[in-house]
Image 1 (cartoon, one colour):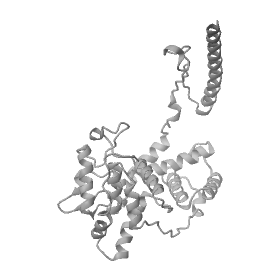
Image 2: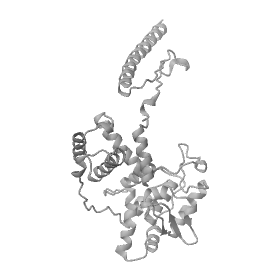
Image 3: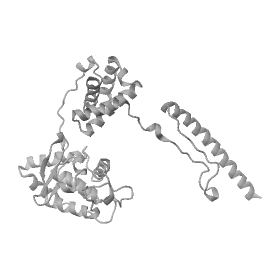
Length: 337
């Protein structure tokens, strides 16, 4: 008898929870349709496919197409003109983001925004964001209105961002050792070591190809760096040995740092390089565990190496060799970053 009562009570609770959940999700559905202007489906199965009702008897299926931004004709024209102008992919994405942001801010097509609205937006942006961020947004918006729309905006004659001189954060030799010695994953250790020993940017390191490593001349051929310029940088022997050890772990024919994927076992078949965010996350975590209070970033590596050379008045390769001979080899097993 008690078992029957408990069973009835259980199914009543499940039915009540299901009804409440359906009502809540229905309200969310109406709200999202109003915000997005695009329909999507919600599916509510009545029963669970798993025996014993261990799983909830409902699940939610959303067609999240409303999240995908459709490229407008003006945005497509902006991308095409930036390509003709010779802007890099990163600059194209930044300028496009600036135009989309002002469109979202006023909920108005960008070609219908007035000079007073643009003035109001630039004042708001300057008060909320850092000077460099405001400068980049101003450049993107200015390019859009002057080159694409050919629309005169008097506010551009007034909007100026002063160029300040901000000294970069530089890590000492001991701090670099502490950060790199905390990293256990070989791919991240090798990538950050390459950045700090050769003075590379994070994008130059993660996009490095095997053919760019010249072990006979002990140099790295950096292709299409900042300003689309190529250059050669010295390659220390300890860094070369660490890169060889890392490459033998995946043997990708093209990328030196291929994306491992979620499983971490398909590096040899990767179609793209290691994500920038992965390296940045590992660096920040290692910096915190090392107890370093400086506001350092991965980009600090390209600053620390040249300044160490100036301080010691020595050749970069010699300084880099001295920096990285004391770094421990990453363990095969242990905690992972």
